Length: 133
Length: 110
Image (tube, rainbow over all chains, first blue to last red; front, side):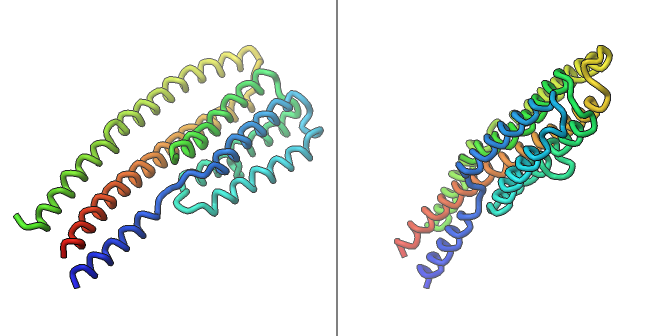
């Protein structure tokens, strides 16, 4: 009887152990690619916004697919919250496109600072995924 | 001391070791990262103000940069919280493994 109880406790412990944040090489690659694609697009903002509407829409779709993947991962709240602050309505990427649209064309220093700031925000996501390894 | 008491004592001793190993310097590391961020923000504020005066940057852009800086704080804190969760999970793994090992030994003796 005691042995059966101990075995049951062991099974429960093993099940509890399965619930933890896990590393995903795909999530890591997605974060790196998202950062690079966004920064490449930011570089284009020394040109008129209107010339790149199609490209921006495609990028938004790509980013949203990465976000959807993150939503489906278990125990992943911190990464999801960072993704929201990057690409959702008030996210730094969305707000950048609004800035570009408002100003039409950005000045070189504005582009440089935007790249730095957006890159730093993406780095938090990348470092968090690395920490899961 | 009975076998269960000895087992519990072993679990306690090994758990304390795991706790120390897992959380050792993490608090200090987090604090340091935030302090560095604060220092960098001061430098950025000076740079952005200077760029605004020279016309290299317009006010709309500076407002955007401030939003990105606020977001950077939030994302850094989220990352640190996420890392703490990972550390806690790693600790939990170690604790559970200790329990599994000790209870397994007990079960075999019964």
